[in-house]
Length: 91
Figure 1 (cartoon, rainbow, N blue to C red):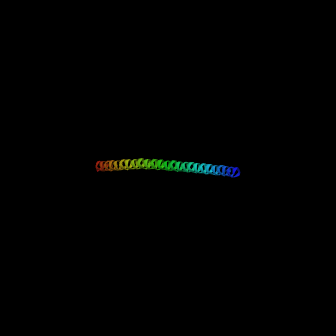
Figure 2 (figure 1 turned 180 degrees about the vertical axis):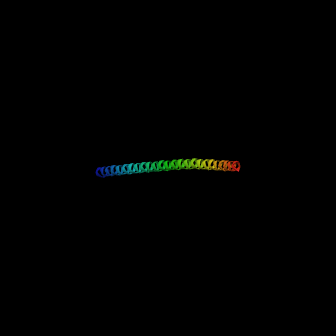
Figure 3 (figure 1 turned 90 degrees about the horizontal axis):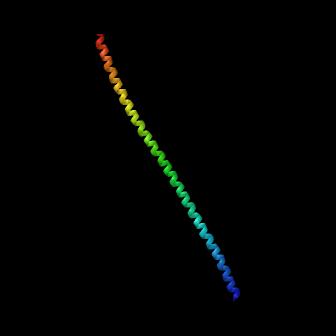
């Protein structure tokens, strides 16, 4: 009888060790998954920020282009008026 009790106690210890090992593996797996998820979120945020910066830069460049085109059209209009004025003075 004592032999059986000792056997059950030993089996209980083995099962407890296996259970603890499985719990530890599950925790490590969850931790790794959380770290991977966190890394993915950081990378996604990084690329989103880069995209936002690129959009902002593109918007600024478009504004500068529109302004430059407006100044060019004003310059050409003033030049045409000046050419017309000089042509009328020569005649």
